[in-house]
Image (cartoon, rainbow, N blue to C red; front, side):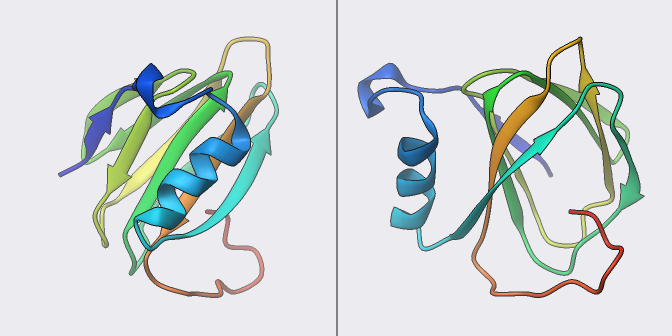
Length: 112
């Protein structure tokens, strides 16, 4: 089941380095992504757990039929094997950090 959490301002400023440091303290490998308005990633699943933490912009994730809208500071944790799709909402790009506890390399053409 997907789990969403909101940013706690007591954690520090909402910025890229803070998000990455928080996930790395949880033992995750991190990367950051930026997608432009209109981007839609079709449903797929990973064999590893994945976290997405939005820095700016808006992202809609549909996971097992549940629609979850994420904005700045929103974090979504997806268990391994969860079918999900995503799309950028609004007119601005979305910037987010991903994290996983498993080091993995996906084949060319596979998008997050």
